[in-house]
Image (cartoon, rainbow, N blue to C red; front, side, top):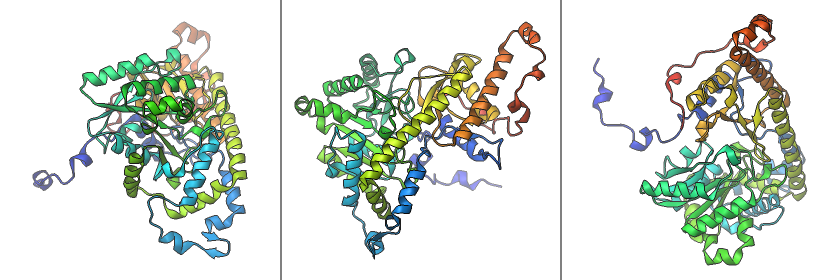
Length: 485
């Protein structure tokens, strides 16, 4: 049979057919494997536990309790009157004023009211993904570059580059100082971008950091602001984890740094070149509601981003519901405090569990994950060794974690491990599985004489190895993928 498709003109655009979307990263491939075999304590106890998803499920009961007490918000009523028709016909892409006012106050409350947010400077978007992409469209042309400290969120390769054509130049950070950004690392990245003849339009940071789980220290923010001021470029601060900082020194927004140096900021026009991204996906645990925001004092950016937001609006009924929720000051005060307490409790459960089996984490104070050092479990200190270990953890142990190479970490052996998207009991199961793997790996690494002295291998308690009955082999084509750099 003649293959007619090969003779026909290309049916899809170059954009649709290119591979710059980043979806072939091990970060996303791990999700795919989990979806094929998801863990359930009763119906699929041998399945893969999802520890690669930064989702906050720890405080749903607080939101559900509020909804039960405030049925009008979910029932689209204002008092005794229905607002269904009003919301169904609402098409203003500037957003509902009541929601923008409530969101502005909530963002300020998260920062202990050290910063005030002007609702007119907020652009609503369908999640932080849309917000970051819209900012790239506003600030960079195709081929322009942003500097991003490593390790960084793997989704940025898709969100910032795929449709915009912008480039990412990594700012290499190391474990020597806890992966903190330094001026020398920024200068090095800037020089590398210049050698590639890229026009550098700005720096993008996540604060608190994803995947490190650390709030950026004020001194580091000061240094980064000084850098962008000296270079005359933009600074985008993705602050979607701002409400998760659970211990001191706490979260400091880049807007606090600007406010403290107001006269100098005006001299360098910094107010027009510093932009904040926010969303309700992490702090309130509402990723399915698709609520994101850009905050900028640059009128031109706000105007352009508002027009772009028509491609990804937040539904009017979602805005109406959340305007009522965030407008309840008693609720937001109690929620923010209790949510942080629960995040810290679950964070400590993971850190303590890993410590018991000989695995260390970067000291952290925010986020829904830990940055975990498993380099001592690799057969070789290389990115190939990291990927081999990752495949064992996913397929043999049944835990989907994110390898550091997918986050462009410059050192092999680090992994992002999420803890807030599961119950405490499921996290215990994950630690038991990983503990069994570490124990078995230690046995295999021991000299033969020590293994004989310890007795036959079958005498060792390792129920995971005996009970694991699902796929121990990579799916076709998966094994051939190279380590991310």
